[in-house]
Image 1 (cartoon, rainbow, N blue to C red):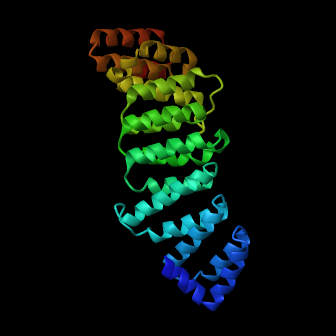
Image 2 (tube, one colour):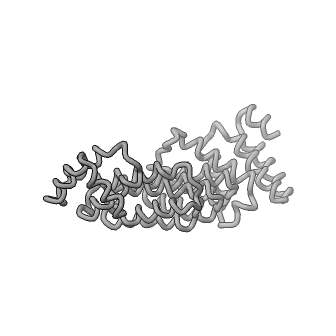
Image 3 (cartoon, rainbow, N blue to C red):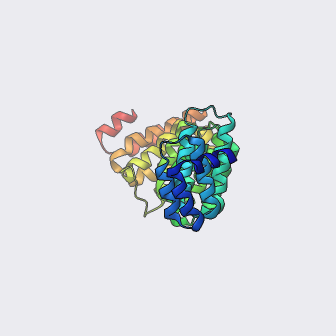
Length: 291
């Protein structure tokens, strides 16, 4: 490091900036001009300049952002186990000591660390970001968190994270249901859809009508009765309430209710449902569908 500093001093162009900095090392513009004049120099020399500047101005967002960006560029092609990657992580940690309220720094860090395959460390970093930032800034963190947690292959962790997310923003419950269907967690998917259909104020971000959400719930209940019954969800009551709400889907719903009992192996109950449906429908279409 001393050799690099001596090389800077020996350079006439750098000597001018060094003189300016020696007079007032706490002036940000002087350091930025110095760094801009050394854009073409080797990366090690620029790192030394950034470190020297940050020693005097540790709370400077501009310096840290520029330094971290260059550090990230230097390890783009590196193996996650390379020592230089660890150096970048340590640099981010030092930056966050001073700039833990800056969402951009957290986003840079989280996007970087989420690609390294360190599940526990990454999860803790996301949790720290949410704890450090005010709730009005959480919108910058949650999309990255959710995208990452869906790719790690640990559905228990993903479910816990999604449940926390819904405490922050319950409007995206359908997105959670989409994920639950992917990992075949049918009982939780049915519970979440039940919350949607029972909420009179619920508006689907996916532009689904209440009818479509209800039919989706009935489909899951009918096709996966053993899983859905784990949490005590009353499937019979759910489908029968649909019969009262949606008169144009009566035949389809009777068939779903019968299918539910068939999959449970309760064939006598399924036959009773079919007979009840045939005796209650009033249109030829519904009668034909059930028959």
